[in-house]
Length: 477
Image (cartoon, rainbow, N blue to C red; front, top):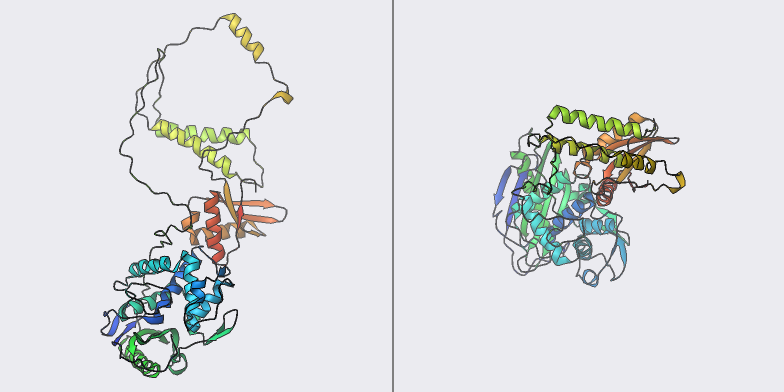
């Protein structure tokens, strides 16, 4: 698919663009919005989604992927995968990025979305989110298929997003060779050797597409991205890209602010319903909340009106009473269940404070007969301890009794600093959790508490994808 030197039987349409990577300004364009066959430039999107999936905990680079018959049967260029074998995702990514292996690209798509067709739909959705308005994908590798089309403009946009959205993986596109697990693979991108400052990113060839290339180069503070569709040969394509890069450096200002493109909203496999976490769909909004009917009977019910100050006093009193009833260790902070109980009681006070019903005068009840009082006194005698039944009421906080641990430290300051830094970097799953430092003989544990089991598991997977130590803590941990 790539690396062939024979010219196609029929010349493919030509298109080109060069962009200032720092600002996104188009410096030159020719037929840049014409929809053409992208060939293996397709794998830029395959890898973009793979990086996105790893960052968000859908999969990890160490996940062992089982190769399907469909992936193994892809034509060259290929890694040589066999149906049924298992290989780590990181090696598939390397093979797709460096060798442009079709079997590796298909295996990546199937591992993330379950099937290549589902993955292609996700590729198209992601393209639209990135601003690639004239791109549709039908497969993960780029072999010619009806409706599988893109433009020089769209692929330049994608190259810029790869550079800025995933700088930790961009170096893959500059590798001239790398280990792909079962073999060492080499790059087809010869411009890495021939153009000063070139550091990626992707080549492509099919008979229908011609010789395609997206290339980026940096000189000093300047960085430009050039794209060519429809080159007549790999050498002439590389020469044209070099001309475009030269033109870009000539036209780009020496100094310009780096305005990184905004990353797209993370959507995962919503359309296909892949198991990336529980989703709750709201089918309608609550438009009214009628007051319940009064209780039947002759007895009047007193609903007191409590202002905000009184509500605050009530909440403080409840918290003080609970702290008095259950003394806390000086070294262990309030547990998630206790915190939820206080929150639940305080929320009840808030509900009372919002009530606007006026006080109703209730007549004082008559005194109980003396004999009944005596009977009650007898019944109220202490029950032997062995006959007592202890009932524990858990908080109704949505099963948020789980947590995660992000390390053990030698000082409370280090643990608290880690908790704060982690909370800021992973706000999506840790927002609303309780940061808790627990002291033990071995040190200070940095924990996030008050999570559901599902949220704790997702948070850990996302943190571990960024090489952050993380362990899930169950209700009894």
